[in-house]
Image 1 (tube, rainbow, N blue to C red):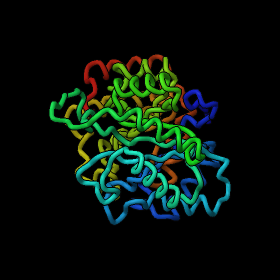
Image 2: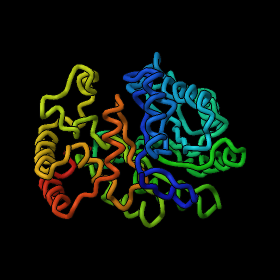
Image 3: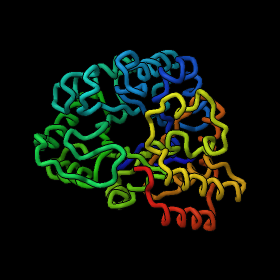
Image 4: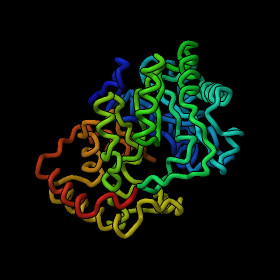
Length: 346
């Protein structure tokens, strides 16, 4: 395993982070525990979850992922062996079963965190993240920013930082992270933290994969210069970058067959790009999954690559991607496809 610095904290986190959003939906408690054990046994010391999970978010399964991790934490008694990250959900009209209102006011953050700690059966989380912004700035599956003059959001970044400062002093969280955030949001958090001597965001969790490299435009430089590394989610693009759909190796349990509303990575342009990436991987004796993950692992702004799996065979392949170094010839071929079919699936 390889390890990264988590911001300026001094903490070392594994370059491969275990994503857990399938626990409680596609994976049972037993399977979740097996994945957690396997990951730790193979050098992974970074675990990511959220109050929202499992996915897709439903009232019936809300909190199930944290509960499964919680029973594992309680049974293993090894809390000092890993870095645990969770998230507080932002506003969404369809998620009011989580909390109502869904916002980042002090009372909401405290309530969300207490509920997560209870489900996780732990006294603290190492990294507590804002799952997405309150303002109308982040729209999943779009590249460009469209300003909404009717957005009633008022800048409350400073209030959020003061709340996190209190929680850090109470020992309930160790560090702040942001997610699904823009370059402006990244710099706004940094500016206010430095100006008022408040906690600095140590990471940003945004989508990043061979079909969506939009993070490289603007945000990557901030990550590197400000030591706010990217925790890349959806590195396999809902499994599309495994190549199994192109090779007709998917089955009834495959993610896109179970949840057919997830079409973000299913456009004709994405399909063509994946086929070309698949050809590159097979030409060089790699699986597409290995090449896709190895590419992400190699980026200088990456703190962690959040991999998820529904079985241990997939998880083993994903974790082992850390041992693959792509040579210049492969990188050049990947860049050629990216230039010709740029960001087909934001």
